[in-house]
Image (tube, one colour):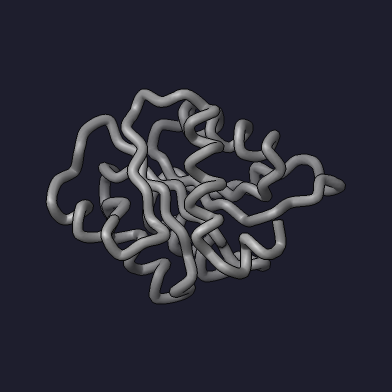
Length: 142
């Protein structure tokens, strides 16, 4: 399922965030938390829908918050596809377990973070802002 979680069009947003998680309850909680923190938030329940959103998003997606382990495209595969569309994209991977060496290698590339589930929503917002601050354009506009 694809949806635009942004409900308050008068809010000044600092970045567009795409939230991808196949756990709909967690996805909605993340969306609401990020939206309440001033982000424009889009959401998808799987990698395929997320990739479509990433291709068509206007303005472009600044931050991908994705579950690492999902049916179909993994978070790492999704991020790779989204990077081809926007090389300046930041990524926050979330997962209930450490995915391993493939993610470690990706995290070393910069503008990427890993947040272990369960996490506090305040940790999510802090990590989202910190990883976005690694983008020169987004950091300047905040």
